[in-house]
Length: 273
Image 1 (cartoon, one colour):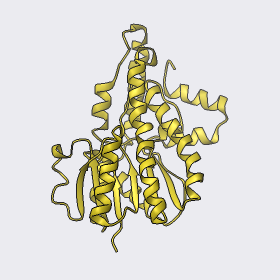
Image 2 (cartoon, helix red, strand yellow; image 1 turned 90 degrees about the horizontal axis):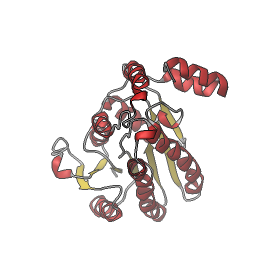
Image 3 (cartoon, rainbow, N blue to C red; image 1 turned 45 degrees about the vertical axis):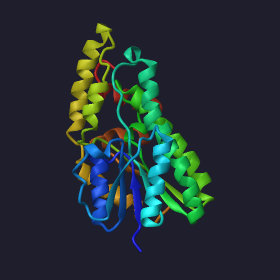
Image 4 (cartoon, helix red, strand yellow; image 1 turned 45 degrees about the horizontal axis):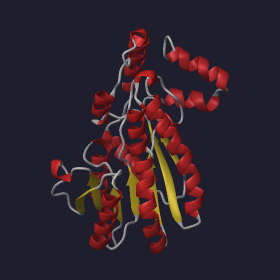
């Protein structure tokens, strides 16, 4: 019997590549997104249906789950992938923008999980794979809003994983580094820059130059999709999967250096920090 996977945020980038790969590997796939009528790339993909799901709209989550179960009989795997980046100096970023980032990147994940957990419990089990970020392991300048959502996700997922294990539900956290996707286009639109404070300009210029160097090691969505597939189907209850595309040195430093030495190292990577 084919297994069924439901994924959020599949209109482009990693979500789209992951939906396509799982369908190619024999899964029934429910590819969800806020506006499925606007995405045509996944049309005519065997074993795949598109459904509307907005992680801030709990009714849409319930409906997508209901359709998936009615169509395929059960759901074996849910991939929480929907999210976006909010960049710019903290001083110039409104609390409303920061709250919106948390609503999608943190509470959106919680919304999906609270609605799939009862289904998995009634089935006798299931897997939830949450796409986090290496940004949940270390901090970066000009990214405090986005990074804080990923730090929050780390603590939440680790904590709830122990609860769900008692219900035979496996919880996984996938931590990628840099990825070449349209994610950055929206992040650019949301970027608040210097927030109207020119004294940050030289710092922003130097930081952006450093960020461009990190971007050189970014992975393609197809590469990330393959790594997600392996993490989701390895048959274990392993919690964390770190794939630090382009930021290997930052992950290594955070894990191996003491706090004082790590801070010195990061400042060397970002002049003026």
